[in-house]
Image (cartoon, rainbow over all chains, first blue to last red; front, side):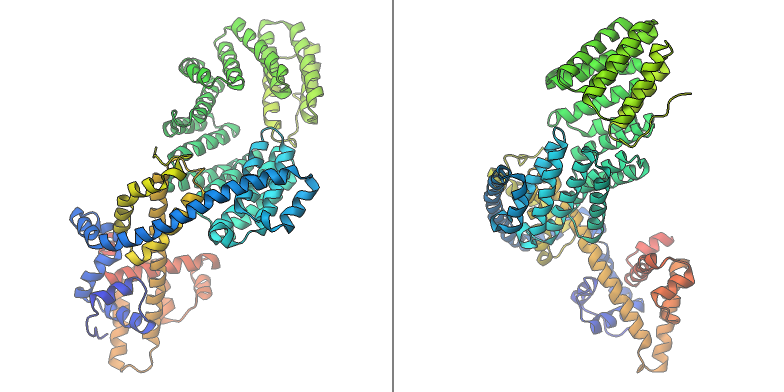
Length: 457
Length: 176
């Protein structure tokens, strides 16, 4: 091939950027194809930008030569961003007001307002609805579903311009659907949860979504897969989330993600994997800025150590973690501490200490109206009685637990498991294995009403 | 933790931008983004930051991470365009009917030499594409790739060919 005249360095640069006309692209490609060493010297520098900075001298030169040009761009962008930021602050306040107004209306009117009233076409209202749905998941899952449905309806009315671009709108839409799925999950409506997450997956595949938004959505999807006991998928998705946070430099969120992934390992029966991930999570979560998440990770690690039979290590870590529980100070955290103290004491054969702790915890949960937790603590107490050979007490606790459950809960399979336990206790045949089996089942069945209890032979 | 950690974001945006400015410039210089193309990248990243400020704990790390990622995407997109252009240029050059016989022979020779230096998998794929005129579905069938993955494989092979064209040393390093 004829090499032809050498293209100018500027032309070669435009070639690398794909900015020449097709005719020029073709001619340049043909010239390079012939292996022109002179032009290759130029293109070699243009090809791999990161290589240039292995040489600090080049970096300095590049910065100086481009400095003024970058300054002009930065000035323009900063000015625009400041204007948008001030506008957003106003919109946020408006979004909060609209939310209050919407929620004061009768439930049946809310969707009508969102569909027909222009004022409610507001991105910040949608954000507030998503936030409210998430908060309601912990206390009132049905309300969480209602509010998430409103968020989905609200995002359906938005256009790209309302959100500062198509990418932001697509991200918000995916997040609204993910929170709807999450709300269905917490209200045990598994069919609708799956339907919502199917939509989420389609949105993720079809749309261009920012990495931060994608990470949040995927995180909810992974939690759903965990509930479905599709552990391998859940772990893969959490890995993707972790990779996204790593790329974004969000180390604390990476820590949280590892904490969530550790729960999957725990559920899947991989205690070693769970502990390894929790230790990594603890390295990343800042105890100063996010003490609650740090405490949750420590709590789970102590529990995992106990579950894997490493009771002395659990005891040592609990000793060092106690100040964090006390610092958190709320009743739930103090109860968790007391419960863990009971478990560790039980593991160390300090039976009297364990009994006192479990009693205390069970009574406190009953007082708070948390029947499920009370039942679980009662089973731990029953375990203590089994070890002490106090058959009558085992039977009494079993009956009390069944009553608690029947009054608080309608989970049929959980009641069936407790009935099996009661029957065995009445015949003085309830061993520690059965107590553990029922307790493990109750923990799993809580998030999975389809789970069936198989009575031991 | 940056000083922009919410809820102080709104009041300190100006200060934050001032503080992060040198690092942004260094990032753009590092990734050799032409100044005219930095505008979109920076604006998208900053808009995302202010839209999600309530959820972002460390805005400086977040912003620099996002900018870095967008710079990489920028280059990926430029590369994709470049590979397409190189591919089109080679196809056009081969198909050009008006060249003298000697020139055509030079071209075939140069192309053969270029392909010779590529990994075996790319050599067969590009050979079939340029010399035998197979289109992607046919290549997938002949080479045993799934129709969905042939595009990725072709892009990788075009990347290898383009690297050869540029002789940046990356390809040579790999061979050595």
